Image (cartoon, rainbow, N blue to C red):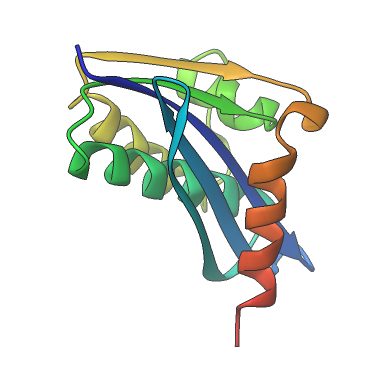
Amino acid sequence: MNSCVIFVDGASSGNPGKSGAGFLIVSQGRLIRKTSLCTGIKTNNQAEYLALIHALRSARRMGFDGVTVYSDSKLLVMQVKGIYRVKSENLKPLHREALGIIKKFSSFEIRHIGREKNKEADKLAKAGVKSCP
């Protein structure tokens, strides 16, 4: 199986405010891709979901069929795992979209990590905020 590890993070200045997403894709110990993007005027949690969605799409395009995702957003991790319900109306469509992409992978896992272990994705997400017009 062709698998990768993904680190994701989202950031927002204002909540809602200018927001950004960042992610890294690592395979066989090598950094394959790092991406930073502006996600418009969103909440922090929306930006977290958008980081996940963009990262998963990127991994699919690159031909990966197994992924392990690491995020410092406990809410994102627990909602994707189905442990927490998605109560916020602005997150429901993003949650559905993420689950739709996840189904396309033969193997998927998502894990919560501390912020100190997600610094690079955090930098990318903050750079995404700064790149917003």
